[in-house]
Length: 99
Image (cartoon, rainbow, N blue to C red; front, side, top):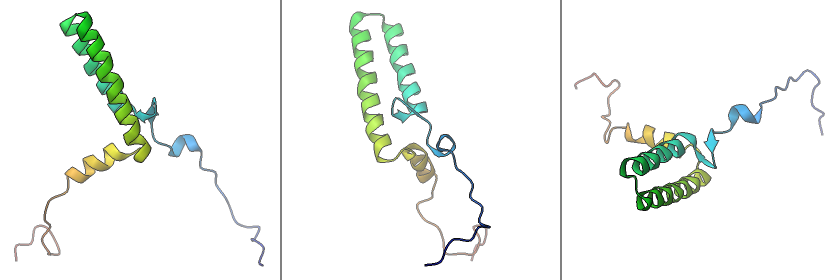
């Protein structure tokens, strides 16, 4: 078995630079957006029922977002990129070529 040569250089990749930006186990932006929507609901309606409903909606949304982040932490970015694709791409060398 050959020994590794001593002139190889290894660089460390820190986990903080490569892991996704999560908050409460879910995508940070979506958690903040659902929290903002719940707070707006609570303060616009200003009843106890609205407060309970807003908190319940937020907890359910965070639970769903956590399940989504467990499946793929970058699922939101992948979906946004997916919906930008066209349904059909013509078999031409460039998109501006007619025939």
